[in-house]
Each structure stands twice: as structure tokens, then as C-alpha cells.
Amino acid sequence: MSFIASTIANVVSTIINSWVFKQGHTDESKRLIGRKKEIPNARVFISDRSQEPDLSLAEKLYESLTKAKYQVFMAHKSLKVGDKWPQRLDEEINACDYFLVIFSPQSANSEMIMEEVRRAKELRDGRKNRKPVILPILVNCEMNSLNHDLRGYLYGIQYLKWRSPDDTSPILQQILEKLLEQGDTTSLEATVEALPLIEPIQINPDTRPSPAAEPELPPGKPTDIYIERPPIEQQCYDAILNPNTALIRIKAPQLMGKTKLMARILYRAREQNYRTVPLSFQLAEEKIFTDKDLFLRWFCGSISRQLRLPNKVADYWDDNFTSNDNCTVYFEDYLLAQINCPLVLALDRVDRIFPHTPIASDFFALLRVWNENLNNSEIWKKLRLILVYSTEVYIDLGFYQSPFNVGLPIELPDFNLDQVRALAKQCQLDWDDSKLEPLIGIVGGHPYLLRLAFDRLAKNDMNLEQLLETAPTDKGIYGEHLRRLLWKLEQYPELTDAMRTVLATNNAVKLEKMQAFKLNSMGLVNLQGSNEGTVRCNLYRQYFTKTLELFNE
Image 1 (cartoon, rainbow, N blue to C red):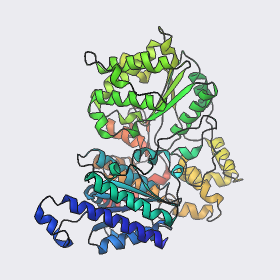
Image 2: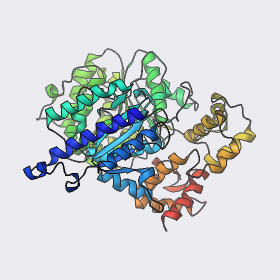
Image 3: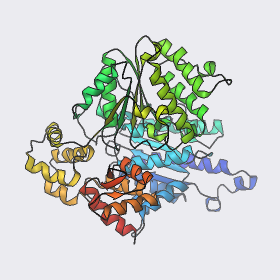
Image 4: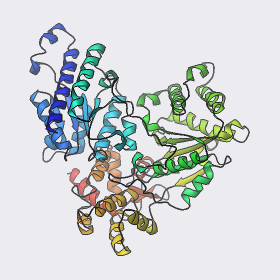
């Protein structure tokens, strides 16, 4: 690992040296390139999990780049006692020129790394200079070990992969040659054409969906674990095969299993020889949501690609008609006409469209029209829709323009006791209710939190008493999960204040509409009545009561 770490540090140092040189736009700045301290240094953010094998590599990178006078941030090296780390992370990611993220089998499912990557990509997509440049480094780690969320965030971004030290020299040569050829330093990713791309989630039609391709499971999971919530699954299977239903709406907070359920519905459809296309709006760059025409072109092109059909958007787009008309014609005259079986289009993370009101209003009205077309058109009977989202639909669509009041509505609940028992058994834990009840008392029926606990306890490296004692702390098994939620809260002061209000009482609290929906989407509160919120579980009550009080001092 020390050899690889040293080589990567040299690669990064060389790349950033090249960047600094090319950013010197005057002859004077070029003459001064050797005198590093007189030239503004690139800022580097290193995202890693402070455990081996990541730690040795990250520390070597940090030491090498710091000695070279670059401004380097790495959390466990740079944070000081008393720092408000959520604000500091935001500041450092916002200011960095390069975002280096290290993935290993031990860190590929880190929630904090995932949130850091999400934030870096969000900044990059929203800036003209495309910074920070994102450089993923995979060490002893396969691409398919990245979960669905990370594969979405890193879609289209090249990565460095070390299978052995023998790979170092050719990869370094490729990067430097491309930089010299292109003379373009605005995006490192655009210059490394020879390196492989991370592809979006693909589900093998010949095998049952694997949880490894989905975001709701912790590391080290068996691939066959799935807990049904009867009658939800059977209702979905029946609906997707029924042309009169044609639309399924799956809503639940984050980490409740929405994408897993979607994958199983698609699997059932493929068993009937249907064509299926899963499309996550997480894949779309932020600029896609700035223009309706651009958005619908991207949408049509993405569906074409997944159907392995040539992209003919330009042929069907006519400026004399609206974007919605063009999109409809593209589906009716081209996509649906090219297939002789039903097509299931599963749209994940559709709530990402909600804040973009002009696009949301027209796009969702378009989906409603398509759904109604099945009553008077044979070709539209081929189309089945699945909409997956995390929050209430807070945009005003109008009753007859909304797809969210038709079809089969599915809202995923927490696990009940029978389902918790089934999950424990599938995790190889032969527990009676006397052991399950204390854990349920702290995390409720939260599928993800239960699974994290069962997975850890099945390894026999801690007992239930130890787990419960440290659970609401940064050092417990939920530490990363809790810190990620805290960081997201701290990015929105109004949500932090709303969460404090909910924590102040055991009763339901009336919340402002948007605050209620966002806290519920994050999974922090349950909603009842008219936007009245209660804390989701005792784990969140204990941790955030203490932490938000400290951060308020």
C-alpha cells in the first residue's frame, strides 16, 4: 500500500502542477511557476474513511501535497477541537479546486463519503468552471461495490483504478499526455478518455435483483436479503401487468427500500418479457433543470440509450411545436413503435424535479396525459410508469394535471414486529422478542437501522448491550449515519430550527409545510394530520437533542 500511496501522490502532484502552470495566463506568471509560494496554490479536499486501507493512502497523499505547498484538507488531520465540523466541511468543499475521494471495500458504503461526493458534484454541476474536479481513486475495490447513489453521483466521471503497481505508469502517462494534448484544465474528467466510465445501475434481466446495486443496504450484506411488506409487493406485481393500471407511485423517506422494491417490480415485468428502463433523475446534471426543452431532450435521449436504440431526438424535434408535443411524438412514433411488448419506465428520485416549478408543472402534466392515453390508444397501452419519490408533492399541479392522484399509490411503512423477526432470521440471528424489543425501542422499525445492527451483531464483534450503549453517539455503529444527517441539517438553518422544535416535546408539533416535507423526506420525523411532526425514533431524539444543543452554543 505504501508504494501505491506514494505513486498516487506523485500522480496528483504532477497533475496539479500542470494545472497551476496552465492557469498562469501571463508570461510573468509562467516565469514564476518554479517559485510556488508566489503563485496561488490549488486547494485539495481529500475524502476518505479514517480506517485502513484508506487511512495510509490518504495520509500519504496529505503529507506529500502539503509538503509541496498545496492547501490540503483532510478531516481527521485538519479539523481542530472546537471546530463546527459541518460548517467547516461545507467551506472546504466549496473552496476546493480538486476533490480526491478514496474508495476501498471498507469505505465504499460510507454515508459521509457519499454525502461529500454528492456535495462536490452539486457544486461542480452548478459552476461554469466545472470545479471542483472530482477524481475518484479505487484501491482494491471493484466498480460494482459502489452503491446505487454513488454510481449516480459519479456517472460519466472517469476514475483511477489500481489493480497492481504495474498499472501506475500507463495511467500516469495517459493523464499527462491528455492534459498536454487538450490544453484544457477546466475538467480533468474530460481529458481522460481512455479510462473506463462508471455506468449507471444496470439490472441483469436473467437474475433476481441484487441488493448490491441498491442504496438501502449496509456493507457486507448477503445478496438474497429482502423483507416483504404484504400486500404491497403483490399489489405492485399485479398492477404492472395490468394495462388499466399503468402507473405505480412509490413514496417513502430515504433508506426505506423504495429502489429495492422498484427493482423487484422490474424483475417481475421482465419475467413476462416486458422491456424495462430504470432512470434516476439523480443522473441529470443541474443544468438540465434550467430549461424545459433541454430537460425533455435529455429525458428522451436517456430512454433511447437504455433501450439500445439510436438517439433520434434531433429528427423528431420541431421548433414549430412545444417541447411536450415533441416528446410525445418521440415516444409514440419512435420508441413505443420500435418495440412489440409493454415498456415499464421506472423514474427514480422524481422529487429532484419538484423545486424546478416550470419544468415540474409541464413534465408531470405530460405524464398524466400519457397515462390517460392508454384508454384510447393501443400503442400507449404499451407504456407502464413507476414514479419513486421521498417527499410529499408540494407543487401545485392541478387535479387533472397531476400523475400523483392516479394509479396505484404505495407508501412504504416501517417494519412491524413480524418483519423485524424475519430480518433478524435472514441475518442469521436466532433471537426471541426479548432481544428484539430493546433494539426496536431505540430505532423503531426503521429497515436500514435495523439491518445495520443485525449485520454488526451477526459478526459477534460486539453484543447488544454495547451496541445500545453507544448507538446515539458518534462512536457507535450509527455514527456516520447520524453525522450525515446532522451535516444536511446544518446546511439549512430553518430545518435545524424546525428539528429543535420537534425535539422539544413528545407531542406532535405543527410545522411549516416545506420544513415538514423536507424533514420527513430525510427520515427524521413522522408526519400526521396537517404537517404535524414527531421524532422518527429514540435514536434521533437522543443524538440530535444533545448535538444540536452543543452546536447552538
